[in-house]
Amino acid sequence: MPTVKSKKKKSKKEATDGEEGGGGVEGEVEEVTSRRRSDSRDPLTPEPLDPAPQKKKKKKRAPTIDLEAEHPDVPNGDMELEWEETAPVTRKTKRKKKAKATEQYCNDLDAEDDDIIADAPSPIPQHSLFSAPHGHSQPVGKVFVERNRRFQAERVEQLRHSEDDYMDPRQIWTTRDIALRVHSSFRVLGLFSHGFLAGYAVWNIIVVYVLAGEQMTTLQNLLQQYHLLAYPAQSLLYLLLAVSTVSAFDRVNLAKASMALRGFLTLDPAALASFLYFIALILSLSQQMTSDRINLYPTANETLWPPGSEQQILRPWMVVNLVVAMLVGLAWAVVSTRPDIDYTEEFLMTMEVEGYPRGEDNLDIPA
Amino acid sequence: MLQTGNFSLVLLIQLTLLAYDLFVNSFSELLRGAPVIQLVLFIMQDIAILFNVIIILLMLFNTYVFQVGLVSLLLERFRGLLILSALYLTLSICFHCWVLNLRWFQSNRFIWTDGLQALFVFQRTAAVLYYYLYKRTAEYMGDPRLYEDSLWLRNIFARTRQ
Image (cartoon, rainbow over all chains, first blue to last red):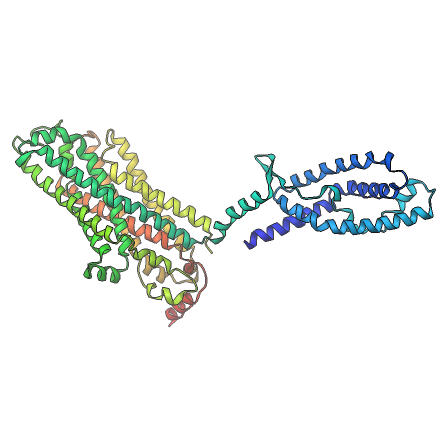
């Protein structure tokens, strides 16, 4: 991702600036001078001076970790890379330093330590001062990442992989992809809804006919048993029918009138299913009054359920429910033959700025 | 240019409002224990429809096509949704007022007449068409062509000027 890279670069620069301009400079100077001192003296008196550089090296480690904390957005892997980059420079300057120091040492063999320090900083290039000590800058497998306000050790490879995994999808996704994804998610929901609705409608009508008995002789039994279920069943039926109808309309791309009409005329499965669902929806809605009447059966008075009127009220209701069940069952079967048809998705796929010729025929369509 | 994150957020809000609308349309009849419950549900439903219309209008105003001045192009394309939204909102408000008026003093009584039944069928059918068109338009608003200059837009502009 270009933006991230530029950020990384920027942060890298900041990190270097931080190293250069920060409080680490004094430590570095001390480090280099002490190193130079120890190098120059090693051949003569190696033993007594050994512990001192060790201590200073240990001290040096703390400021570098602080620097990382000051720039939390700098990936640690990058810091290490930077260390690797600067390491050869350090080696070169060290050799130079070593050579110069030896010469000086030969000339002023009996000179004081302070004199050597005073002369030393001027010939050293500025950049080498700010590089990390060579002995401790070797990249290790672990880096320290700030998480939940704490630094936790993590392997470099894992960190890089996780960064890649996180960054890649965002980089690729556009608004069109999101629209397509939402659309395909709804298509899956719709597919589930088609099947569930068909099964539910068939179950419902079987229950009703079983409760009604042979030749509808036990309608009182149906009313007593089914009155609790009538209204929830009606509500669920509307919910499923609404989702299924929208899904079927999506498949046929109903808003594009010419395409939808062509689908109807050629008995396209998606167009046929849309038609069947829409009819089923209207038929189901038309039974709302009767469903409420059944729902209120226990509290009913004679005006709501006059004696002997059960058959007259319930027969059309059962027939309409049977038709609805058959319609949604048929629609489900039709959709199942070609579940991959989705003209709206194809339409959404043409949304490209450069793809003018592809999208041209879709331009004048009212949404 | 429309940002992906912003578009996702707006789409999420729109779909949430649609889902609430569908829920109320499906189950409001079951939640009529007290008339005040239905009152609150219906008010929120009408506000949700209004919000959805406002959101889609704001998105239309945010397009490059609109800023260039091709309002007629947008109106032509989204006319169906705008008309149906207005119709659905009107039908919903009418149905809600009617139902609440009849049920206000006794919530669990039989209120259905032929007129109310007809209004109910129209309102619920318009709701399904509204869901379809709104969802489609909300997805269609992710079209990158609406937010930047393109050959397509230039051709439309040239055609309009002629």
